[in-house]
Amino acid sequence: MATRHDTAAPPAKEGGAAPGRPAPVPTEAEQRHRARLSRRWQRDKRWSPYAFVSPFFLLFLAFGLFPLVYTGWASLHQVELTAPTDMEWVGMRNYTRIFDDDFFWNAAKNTLTIGIISTVPQLLMAMGLAHILNYKLRASTFYRVAMLAPYATSIAAASLVFVLLFGRDYGMINWALHFVGIDAIDWQNDKWPSQFAVSSIVIWRWTGYNALIYLAAMQAIPQDLYESAALDGASRWKQFLHVTLPSLRPTILFTVVVSTIGASQVFGEPLLFDANKGASGGAEHQFQTLGLYLYEQGWVNQHLGRASAIAWTMFLILIVIGIVNYVISRRLRASS
Amino acid sequence: MAPEDAVPTARKVRRPKSARAGGQMHGGPIAYIILGVFTIVSLFPLVWTAIAASRDNNRLAQNPPPFVFGSNLFHNLDVAWNDANLGKAFVNTTIVAGTSAATIVFLSTIAGFAFAKLRFRGRGALMLIVIGTMMVPPQLSIIPLYMMVAELEWTDQLQAVILPSLVSAFGVFFMRQYLIQALPDEIIEAARVDGASSWRVVWHVVFPAARPAMAVLGMLMFVQTWNDFLWPFLVLSQTGNPTVQVAVAGLGRGYTPDQSLIMAGALLGTLPLLLVFAIFGKQIVGGIMQGAVKG
Picture 1 (cartoon, rainbow over the protein chains, first blue to last red):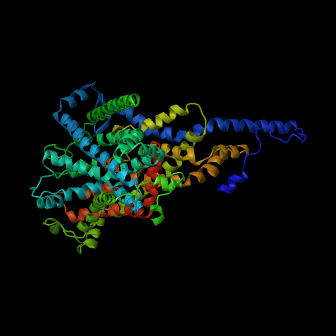
Picture 2 (cartoon, rainbow over the protein chains, first blue to last red):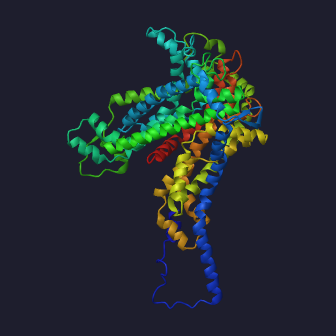
Picture 3 (cartoon, chains in turn green, blue):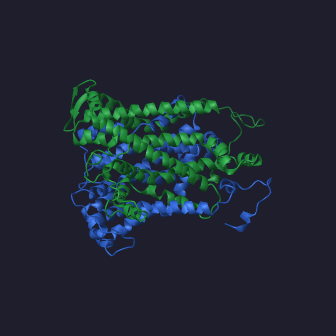
């Protein structure tokens, strides 16, 4: 590869014909030919960037933006799964209907609590792990790969395994707990245990991934900062607080945003964790998330219009979270 | 590591980048204990899937849970394979994940190259849109997509899964970050001065330079599409024409599901990717960290 580029080393800049050599007078045909080439070259230079980015944007328009807008449009109609093209205008009724539905608020609350108990410990643990991995270690690649193995496991497979591990009567976790004197916990039917169990699948799959992202950011911090902090007598903990954390702020923000988006959409884990194999998120909707509620309204109850309203509500919530995030990060930046 | 590493070198000596990047302080025993615990937690559910898959349903409904392998593994794998139509599911998933990953890598490389190295009007705004699309939750688009699929009568057909997964904003971002540093401007200029058209530049300069990142992005996207659940679950049936994840999820249905069979299916669904990981784990880890630095 390198050799090829070497032969293509840039000649002298434009108009770089050696001064000593008299320039041959080009014929008219040659001039026209050159002008045409140069026009083509100009056109190529001008438009090829658009040619390179347009496939992405065309596909995004078709499968990203159009559906986004159309979902908003559909949310103002009554649409049934059985006849998705028959749309009847109902204005805001889908929204008022879901806001009147206790199950919507239940799902919103569950999404929030599951989101918090899966995201907060996950990111804290990832930060700690990254800090440890940033030391010089034997076999450090092994730990990184092992930690990332859950990322290669699908939601479907992971959820099914965790259902067994969290079994009430014969699950390994209850079996281990009885040694420390804790009675069997009904991980599927009790509200908080079931939410914890669903969250643990998320935590298990994503902690290693986030740890690697933090580790990458930590390795980009210049060592001089630590050395001067050490010279100033800062302990390792102080160094972590005053050097590592501030440097990681953009990365932390990034992972918080990505995890928040992920948490707002949790779907496969609660769907497959359900002992009744339904979309209700447990017999009493104790771990039904908004994603699952959307699926239930759209594909079980067949109200696509209402499901669209849920999707847009989720989107609006995310936008609000995004704005709050942005404001907080600006404040943080301003105060530091 | 070599023992010399432990000898503190003089402050003034600039260490090789790799040594500095690895952190200067050595981890103590506590670091190894914590890492050991996390490694076990990460790997145990996977190992236990295999153990559970090698038992029978009755043994799984007893205390204590089994910790060692039984003799039923191949029987269970065989039944799960046939029950869940896994042969077809594997072919389907390979087609879906292969097509998506290859297309994403190609489109992301040319778009990433344009964003990294070419000047054009609207570049900043378009890049902002790319980053913005990473924030749009996929649930927002599934309803119209589902209507489209229903209208086109693509239900249960693979193109319904493939088409929406052909673009990745993350991919564009990833390739852009890589090409900014991996591809010197001079090389492109040189090729341009030699009269190469933009496509020739892409083909003879950008692709060779981007090959390592393309390989990593390809693997990441393959893993992601292979594991995709929500959309294939909606448009593909669990028995007719499933992907692996849909087929595996389908194993858990029914009133008295056979747990050892479910675990056998889950094992089969996970194994190919774990193999990819065992072989290319280092590169994948490097790729994720590469993509993260400027995230």
